[in-house]
Amino acid sequence: MEVTLEGKAYINGSFENCCIGIKNGKIHQLKKVLTGEHHINFGNNLVLPAGIDIHVHFREPGYTNKEDFKTGSLSAAYGGITCVFDMPNTLPPTTTQKAIEEKIHMAEKKSHTDFGIFAGINDDNITNIKTLGKKCSGFKIFLGETTKSFCLKDINLNRALKEVDNTKKISLIHAEDEKCLRKHKRPEQNLKDHCKNRPSECEETSIKLLLDNCKNISSKIHICHLSSCAGLETLKAHPKNISIGVTPHHLFFDVENINSKQNFFKVNPPIRTPVDRESLSSGISNGFIDILESDHAPHTLDEKEQEFEKAPSGIPGIETTYPLFLNEVKNQRLSFNRLISLMCEKPAELLKINKGKIEVGRDADLIVIDFKRITKIQSENLHYKCGWTPYEGKNGLFPSYVFLRGEEVIQDFELVASQGIGRNVNDFFP
Image (cartoon, helix red, strand yellow):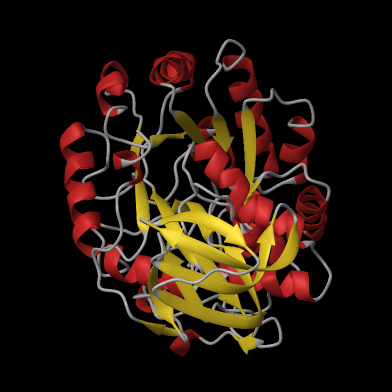
């Protein structure tokens, strides 16, 4: 065996004191006792599947003053995430075969994690979806405008979904209705104004449109960053091929509990009311929500410090998502089973990648956690290019070791892997 790891491993829904044998980047054996060329005994520390983040904006190409694949993936690794999926609203947008290939090339040179690239669908490239599907991991559809995005007209939604269905790839939906957003557009000075400008009615309308247009679609459809009680209720009887994602910022914050620096919490869809936040939290606890996704969307301090209306929408979160929710588990507000499902198992299942579980044959993507070691989150200790976090002062449990396909990326809280270790998941799971 090339590498053996010993500790309390999360296997089939419970913890076992055992050894994990790793060979050729995959979990080769799970036994009480194993020896390998390189053996690490983690004692009573927890060995968990590494996280998968299906929703990141690493801002490359075009906006690398905010983030790039090097810093974004580095932040991911420090937060226990070993696989990310990047969104297409870059410059140029990832809507052509050339743009997909160029972004893959950038990521291959820089990434500390494995990655997938989502292509964007607009009104002009629907006829090219089959070709794009050979290169990308899935397709993003914006039904309403957001930061540097493009929209798909309602009339083209059904056609686009059918074309994606033929590729057997996933469609990811930004569910805010553009006509509704335009109707409510007003000057804004704070988060409550922003919430009124992008009301839950727009999310609900968009979800209803999607449900009307996906009746004969068999491929996976994922609703990104659900933000409202109204949206949740609309999805109560959704088809089995639809999954639902929620972000940390919609679970930790509401318009009543943010009193300062409101510009920094401006995001689309907006942070809403306590009722919306509590509804989403219930959806996490009861299993209705499928996935936790960071929607890591950094902007610089200078951009965010502008007056509220000019400040761009977006919040960084990839480095803190897994640690924040491990702390929720520690405080018995969430079970291990739910967290591992939300951050590891369901994302792997949805994107059809061989990760997300400690199981023979899976990629050896693993993290090690000292459950007694709580860290207070501070911007200066994170690795984002933007230099700030909305979770300043909150507690998290960060991994001491991170393994990507059996190779150490983080060792004793320090980076030990070179950039470029990450690979395009399409090379393994097309």
